[in-house]
Image (cartoon, rainbow, N blue to C red; front, side, top):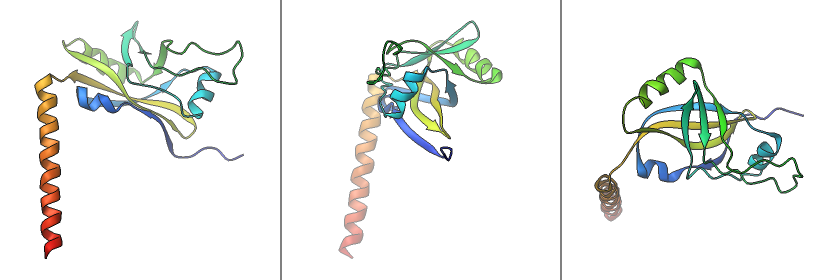
Length: 157
């Protein structure tokens, strides 16, 4: 049987870019059980309430919901259990340095399979204020209007 190639997206945290200013992104492996992998292969996961923290020099992913595998038995996993992230030591060192500053957090952006292995894209982020969110929405609306006007002008010619 041929080995999987490429990247298959499972879940994406769309609210993250709305609620946070994203700084650095990292790709990390996940330590998972068998039923978690099967549930992910079925395309079921939710990253909205997820965050990561550093404990004893290791990075742990909390609050990510991977539902129970439907054909699983008593060996099924807990849906919101902490999951260890696999990163290089220098990446963990950079994360520790960033987390020592006030106001920073680590959030998951997307969960995917890359060449058959489960990966999560995490980012160091700083929370946006309400007025920042309003400004971002207003800028996006203005950009859309300018694009519509540009397209309409070229259609008239």
